[in-house]
Each structure stands twice: as structure tokens, then as C-alpha cells.
Image 1 (cartoon, rainbow, N blue to C red):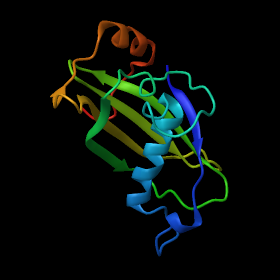
Image 2: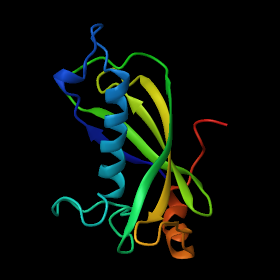
Image 3: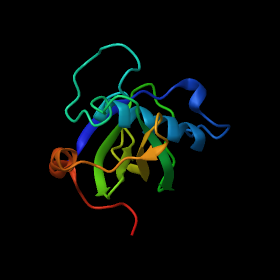
Image 4: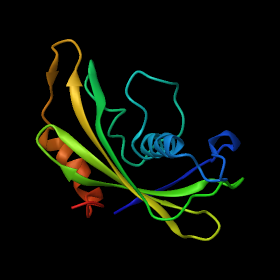
Length: 151
């Protein structure tokens, strides 16, 4: 199962060619991840409920840290004054990390512009240790587990 979120493109996200700059694509991925899975616990103020609160239901002192990003650009994502459509799912669950997968679509043409993955590890700041993913969290993620974008 994939979650679909809409992330606004900003005028300042454009490069000289009218495309969304590659650095801003990472911002769009971050926004999509937070819209789909919730903000990290203890940050921001309450907003809309998310379908799969992976990050907002972490134990105290736990941080969700980005380990790696992979992005493959398929066609340019041009600036539009409407939000980009992003599909988000989990492509891998390992002992102490998950991989979030994305597909970014042009909101007008429907073309798939990019595919991406972000690997995230869970870290306890107080002890300085990487945390294993619990059986409960793995069960929560199971319905959203899908094919990876990269093999």
C-alpha cells in the first residue's frame, strides 16, 4: 500500500531552467515523509493525524536520522503553482533501519519525474546507540511494505 501526499512547489525552488532544483527535491521528499509518517516526536505543534505515525510515536530520546538518499531523475519536474503528487511507501525494514521509497509525479501531466529512497536509522541520543526496530513497529509497517525503487 502506498500513501499519496501533495507537497507544494515554491517559486524559489526553481533553477535557471525552470525545473525544481535537485537540492529542493530533497526538501520535497522530506515534506512528503513528514506528511505521510508524522513529524518527529517532540517537534512542531499538533496538526492533522497521519495514517502511519512512524516518527511521531518514537520512544523518548529517539531520533530518526537520515543515513542515505538515492534519487533518480526521470524527467524534469517543472515549477507549477499546484502541489506535486508524491507516493510514499516503505521499501525495506531491517534490524535497525527502514527505507522509505518515493515516486514524484508532475501534478498536471501525471508523468513520473523522479524515484527516490531514504534510509533512516533510529538512534537514542542519551545512550548513543542505534535502536533495533521492535516487532510491534515492524507489524505497523507491514501493510506499507512494497517494492524498492533501486535494486
